[in-house]
Image (cartoon, rainbow, N blue to C red; front, top):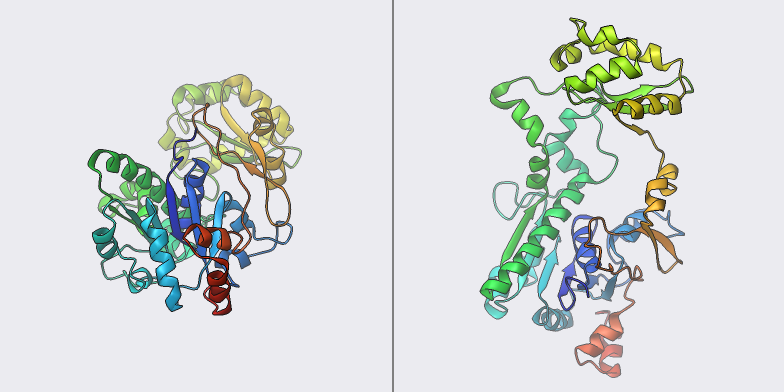
Length: 392
């Protein structure tokens, strides 16, 4: 048994935020019906061809879903869509601003007909305010939220290497849908969830925002190193590899000096005997650390750090992650089908140990169209007519 067995989700989605949300609902057992434009589909299908000819983005966010090809601009589509929504527990959409309302899928309209329905709207800036109708993509929200102002190095802002604004919005949509399902179990009524990518990212910006409150200086741009804790970041070893390490308190600083740098006198050096001093004198301290590490291989540095109880990590490549010994030991990779064959997929993190997550195939465009329409009462002649008209 899975937590969301019996829950039906209808989703009008594209790109990352909504698909990532609904894939996680599917992981928990929900039936997710993904409505896609005939012949084109979710435009994330065309982002790249890296997974045996399929898009890496699409493969990641769309397993365990059913794909219904339906042209929402065709008159006959409205009846089909209404029949789907009538039997749904949750409707998710991240269409362009205003599109859902034009299709009659706004919460005010739907709640009158289907009071138990939960509607989750995901957008760049939310359903009201001066930015309501402004288009938004991940990088634009990284910029608008201030995230780009705290990343990279001086003069070289850097975006996150993955779609963190989309991921943040998708996670808040997912968790709030779960909350809404619990609430409906108590009240018997659905609700509307309004998820803004901007607000999702600004929530994640809490520490730097408070650090710079009342016009104070924001955290310094420090590349992959921490802006306000030192040493905390990447350091080169003598074999050309990089080791990441982080200190959190004065006890660890003392151990680092004694057992890693082998210079116990540094622990009480006036230049370095508090985190704020180490941060201010990071260039001088970095020179000391790099000089010591230059005589050691990365594995030797890590051995010293481990023996001292200092947190550390290797700077892994993506290939290293696929073969990561911890993930292998915990058997976290599972095979998932796609239209181009089987691929590995990470099991959902953190599920209860007695829940077997749903790991069904990534659908081809329109793969389930006929089966879903038959479920809604359409016979073969009706399906053929819809296909001839371009509705499906």
